[in-house]
Image (cartoon, rainbow, N blue to C red; front, side, top):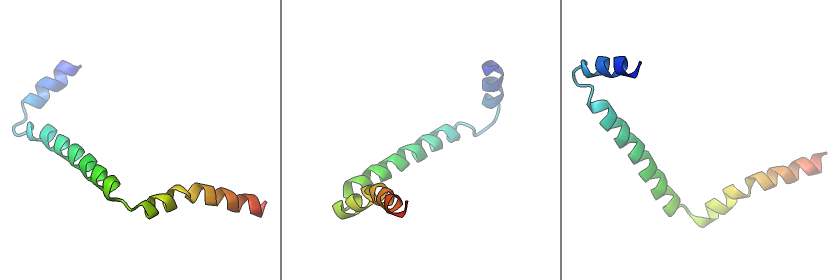
Length: 63
């Protein structure tokens, strides 16, 4: 099955650009995500990390 797909894809002109674009998009996404994590403010990280605990406390008081 893989032979059939590989031979079929090799016959399409200009198809070699798609794996390169996919790799660049994948790499770019994780570079941007890494940059965002390094530059995120500590106050924001603390606030967001406490959201599940705050929701749990609200549910306990309502019951």
